[in-house]
Length: 209
Image 1 (cartoon, rainbow, N blue to C red):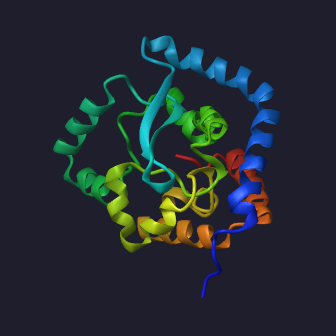
Image 2: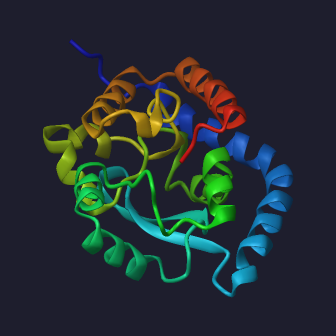
């Protein structure tokens, strides 16, 4: 039996923790985000990329990142999938590609270090995301959650979480769903602190993609 995920921490203290940490980190992160934005925008495209994701209670929001893809990313993806059946199968299964033709050289570095996700501190300040939680998904991915979608929708998505420090893209989507459900029902202040510390180690090891 799992305990009720609605605790004092999840209902009240988690938001206070997010705000306090975001405000403390903002003076340090803002110059870094600005530099990355300038470097990314040199190709004539936007420095930021806001993708629509599903948040708590099914609310749609724009999840912000430093752009890591070429300007014509959607067209290039469609062309690649049409010409590569194996890649199309991988995309259908995982909604990701190990050999993604859309990723720029700078974008590959940003993804490996997870620096592309720094602008999501804005989503945290707005209350759309938490520092720790299930990874935000697009609407097409919700069907992969099946009956577990209730657990996902119960909490705000996180910048980091159990999936990010447990193998990330090396685990199956079903395992990712299980991790999200495990987190939702086991969330606590100490769990969040532990996952954030593990995230720091993952960034240093450059395990992101």
